[in-house]
Amino acid sequence: MFAHKITDGYKAVMDKVRMKTLVHGDKTLMVEFRLDKGADLPVHDHPHEQTGYLVAGRITLTIDGRDHDVRPGGSWCIPGGISHAAVAHEDSVALEVFAPVREDYLP
Image 1 (cartoon, helix red, strand yellow):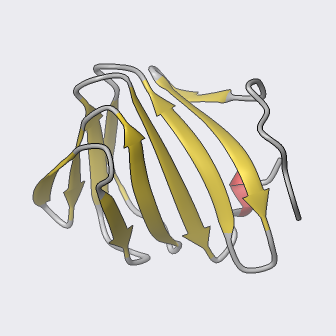
Image 2: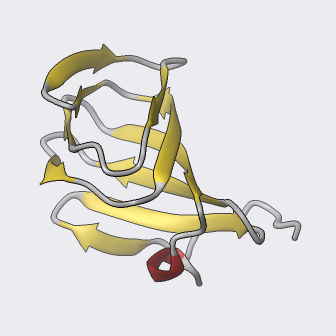
Image 3: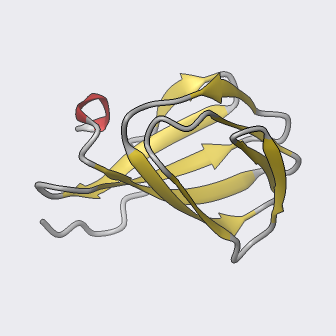
């Protein structure tokens, strides 16, 4: 699958958080998240491994109870089943890849 840059198509996930699935295959799916300053993603977990990269902004990412100050260029990998949360301190953009494919994120 190949996709060109499209500036629309984002959907609200929760207050101050929008997402767009960019591309997916049989085993992985890549999403762009846009988090407005003050976005607060509560602690959650899912069976998918989640690998991310912060493109812009600043967030605190809490993984398994440990806080990480993430700035542009920072990256992470969260194993499936591990609790995690995030708070955006600035308007932020993150790219994340999920494996296996998150069916709920398919376009």
